[in-house]
Structure formats: structure tokens, C-alpha cells
Length: 508
Picture 1 (tube, helix red, strand yellow):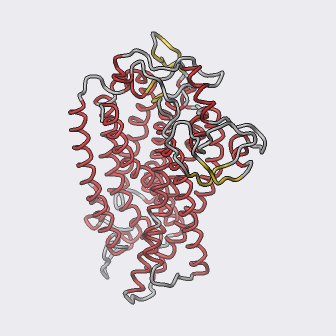
Picture 2 (picture 1 turned 180 degrees about the vertical axis):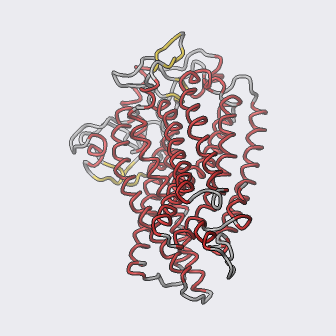
């Protein structure tokens, strides 16, 4: 592999691993704040148990997310310095907002929440929970603002061949961002809901297998199952609606990405949605690709009607070549690609199957939630030998949906790292090829060394994360609630635990 391929593998591996932490942290933080709100309003101890248990798992994931996220910013200077020079004037603002405003609020109020159980009033402590949970959402917004600018650059003017920020408001209200943000947040809730559902179901199944009594803890696990299932199901509905909006916008802004996602080799009017494609989808001419399709559906997904034309890969390849050039510029940063013909079509198998795996795993997650709601209705508990392990395995489905969604989004933008804006409102000349973005002063050997090192470290962190999650999940409510003696005071019970018994302080 050359330098560019190694750099892309490194960024891809570290980013995908980091993003496993992000949706769970965001979704679970909001759920924990909601559970604590229920305890504050009702005084019911079951909500306190839920708050402390799921809060403990949330903090493990938060800590790992911070550790793995820091590396991403280092890579901008180490592996992608040319990219950083090009986008730096734009990215500086949203990334600073994320670090100084959102992450600062997250860290401060999470610390107050962890150590404040017996030191703050219940109202102030609850406010801390909402402060850090909403800050995670704000953090996602600023990061998505930067990413959406890469997908659809706005709010800049070209000065000496480089974009200069002219309107931060345009960047923060980019229509690509306004479509991507709700879709991403619904994805976070889908992950968190299925996570809560899967672990709670496994705990109930395990208790039943061990012949444990049907006590209050069992009812609390049942409540957690229902909460997780409702959140996951609601999230899937939100994902479907926001995904449709995002898809229509993407047909306007990056039509070649969406044509590749459908293996639509030639222009069709009306266009059919491909359910399953077979043949050699890696061939540039697409001629051997055959699809099982739903007639007219792609026209509706692209433009909201059943008769509109949808351009195919071959036509779009010619249009891109006419607009942006047939060959790479004679730029030393491009290495062997300098002067070579540009293939604007992204990797067809990756975009096509990434799109379908995203939808498929999301649908499986929704079916798991729907099944859980049905089998737990009216206080019932599921029966059978396999439902617990199956519920636990369903936790992976929204994670995989998120991962494949981001692979589709990023790989479908190639060969651009900053995609051109095709709209009349766009700024002419704002784009950057991925091959131009990699650091020119780094050798393939150095990049390979960092790839191996980072992948190894992340592998160790994965083992640590799974170990901690399994350990604390097995501990159940008993591991988070303080042992009460007969002389416990009323004040202690009202605060939900006190002093050195507050096991949540393990995180720091």
C-alpha cells in the first residue's frame, strides 16, 4: 500500500472505533438524565437504581470515548497536515466551540454529578445531569458542522486558493448539517435504547435461569427493558423520517454517491430502487450488475414523486469530469496520481452494501424493540431458552448500522475529502482531493508504524472496555446501591447514597 492508503486505513480504523463510543455516550446520557428526573419527581427508588446502574456503564463508555477521541485531533496534524492547512480557517471555529463550550461543560458537570450525590441538593444534582447530557448533544452538533462542511462547503470565500471563513452562521446552519444532526441523534438513541434493552433482558433471563425470586429488582429490570424498547422503536421511526430527508438532499448535493448506493449504472426515468444487486459491481462500467428492484421507488426517494429522472453513474461520471477535470492536477502532493485520470465514481461495492447494511441492521434493531414490547406487555416476561442471548446480541445491530452509515457517507464522497458544492448558492472552487490531503513529510514506513501502534493500543482498549462493561453489568443494582444498615438516616436515603459508599466515584 502507498502512503495515502495507509493513512486512510489508519484514520478509518481509529474513527470507527471512536464512533462506537460516541452514540452510546450521547444516547445513554440523555436516558440517565431522564431516569434521574423520574426519581426526582416520584421519589421511587426503582428510578434511582436505574439512574445509578446505567450511569455507571455510561461513565465507562464516556472515559473510553475521551481517550480514543483525542487521537483523532492529533491525526489532523500528523497524517493529514495538508488537509488541516486547507480547512483550518473553517474548522477552527466549530472545533473550538466543541472543545471549549461543549466538552468543557460535559467534563465539569459530569464531575459534579459523579461526586455530588451526597454533597449537592437533589435539584442541583439533577441539573448537573441535564447539563452534561445536553452538552454531549451540543458537542455532536459542532463536530457535525465541521463534517457537513466537508460534504457541502458553505460560508467561505476563496483567498489565494484557500477557503477563508466569511460566515460562521452559514456553517452552523448548513442544510446538510440540519439534515444530518437529527439523523445522527436518532442513531444515538437507537444505540442507547437497544443497549438498555439487551442488558436488562439478559439480566432477567439470567435470574430466571438461576431460579431467583420475582422481587423488586426483577421488576426494575422489566421497567428498563420497556424503556429501552420504546426508545429504540421511537428512534427507528425518527431515523426513517430524517434519513428520507437526508437522502433527498444528498441526491442534490452528491448525486454520484447516491447513484453508486443504488448501483444505478444508467439514467432511468422513472427509477427503480435496488433491493439486491448481483454481478461484478466492481467493474467501472457497471454493465454486469443486475438488480432486484422496486419500480418507481427510487424516483420517490430522490425527489418525492414517482416519475422523476434519476441520473446514473456513467452519466454523472462524465458530468463530473466535464466540471472538475478529467485528470488530476500536476501536483507533487498527489504522488503517483499526478496527471492520472480521475475516477469520480466511489467504490461501488462499499457504497452499495454499506447503504443496505445500515438500513438492514437498523431494521433488525427496530424489530427487536417491537418484539420486546410485545412480549413484555402487561407486566409479562418472555419465556424460552434463547430470548436472553438473542436480546443481548441485538445490542450489536444499531452499532453496526451506525458504523456502516458512516462508512457509506465518507467512502461515497471519494475521491474528494472536501466535496464540491454543485448548487448555485455554492462557492466555486472549494474542493480538495483526498490524495492532496495526506501529510507530504511522512514516509510510508512511519505511517505503517503508527497504524500498527494505534491499532494495537485500540485493541487493548477494546478488551478493557468490554471487561469493564461485563463486570459492572454483572454486578447489577447491588453493585451501585449502598448497603443500608438499620440505623441509616432519612437524609442518607433521600440523597440516594452518601460519602465513601458512593460507588459512582470509581470513574475518577
